[in-house]
Image (cartoon, rainbow, N blue to C red; front, side, top):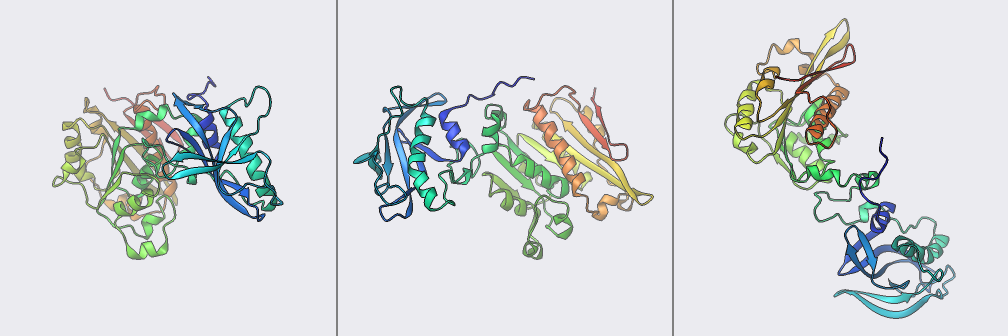
Length: 390
């Protein structure tokens, strides 16, 4: 297996991955939230900055070993000004000015990289502050970092950056996902899709979020939420809106009367209890060449134990061969123990994971060697089986 990185490591990327609060503003690299010591021997916070240009995926210094600091006089832990700081104003933006120039050259060849330069000056400023208060840190983490303009997140995705998957993530950028049914399995689909940089996520469900939903849904709902009995789609839109922008709730059941709500989706997950509504939905999606995945679960009690199957079916615009694998008539609900709201969150989560994984393989985020159109998982024998529709 190749271990070569998918995205080149950069000085800016290293700073972000370390948890520094870094931005590039008007031709300047700015590192904020830097703790330092004032002349009163108290801890305060300032910023470091210097002119740079962004060349491809790298930052290039517009100066030598110098850097500028914004704040009051930086000192050691005793309140004595540090020797490398000289009072000198430097304009960063129209409303942001540095007040000191720092000059500390490590040797005749300067710093080995922009990363080494920035972190060296951070140590000079922050070490005295840490000596006074070991709880302070110059790396406040991703919650303080600004999100890249082209990403639909409310805070930075450091998991992708650390894994070097930014290039692969581009397959998600123009995706407008619909999730029809946000109960057990659908809730976990939302959870997993929200961790990808898709452009939009639309949630469709006309039901209320009740106690039995809480026990087979991702996360842990507050009791006051359950007492309020919010709409499911609106509840999940509110929860995942904390992480992902472009999450919209449609508090309705999708049927023949409102199929146009799906028109601008690029991919749809069907995780609904009402199987009788599926034929019209599938026909509508096929007419508009919108691919979809339908999930299903059948659980029954046998000799005091639960058994059953999980199913994931991929529907593609150019083939109707998979339609026969999707149930469209609901049988006697008493024969299906899942309809009694048995609390089986692990099966909901597993079914959603299979579904989202199949979607990612279809997008070519993951390698896809099977090309199956339908997959089933048997609880009893712990076995997966694939089927390719002809």
